[in-house]
Image (tube, rainbow, N blue to C red; front, side, top):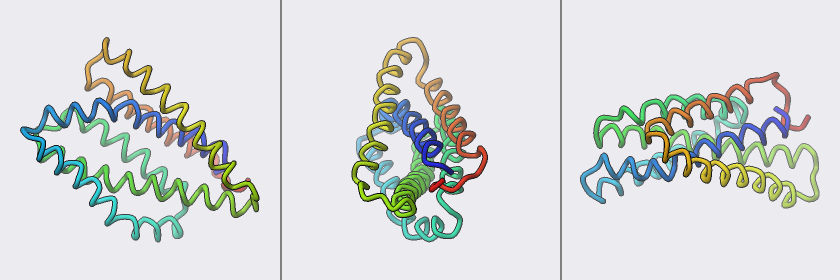
Length: 184
C-alpha cells in the first residue's frame, strides 16, 4: 500500500475509534454493576494487548502490515456490531479481550508500516514524517469526536457503534484497494 492510502485508512480507523470511545466508556459503566468490573474490563483489554504483541510482531514480518490492518478493520467492524447487543458484563469482558488483541494488531501494524516507509525511502527527516502522519490522524480524530458529540443528541448510543462499524469497514475497503508497496 502506498503512504497516502495508509494515511487515509488510518485516519478513518482512528476517527472510527474516536467516534465510539467516549460513549463506549459510558456504555461499559452502564452494563457493569461496579467500578471493579469496569477495571476488569480495561485490565483484560490491556493484558490481552500485552500478551499479543510478540506474536503480532512476528506476524507483521510474515504477512505484512496491510494484511494485519485488514484484519483489524474488519475485526473492529464486526466488534462494533456486537457491542450494542452485549448482554452483560461477561459479554463485555469477551469483547474487551477481542478488542485488546485487535488493538495490538493495529498498533503493531501502524508502527511497522511507518518504520518501513521511513526505511525504504531513506528518509533523513523521519520525525517530520511521523509528525505529519500524527497531525492528520489526530485532526480527523478530533473532528470525529466533536461531530459525534452533536450526533449523540439525535441518535442512540447503539447507532454510534453502527456508524463506527461502517467507518471501520470503509477503512478496510480503502486498504483492500489495488495492492501497492508502502514505499511506492
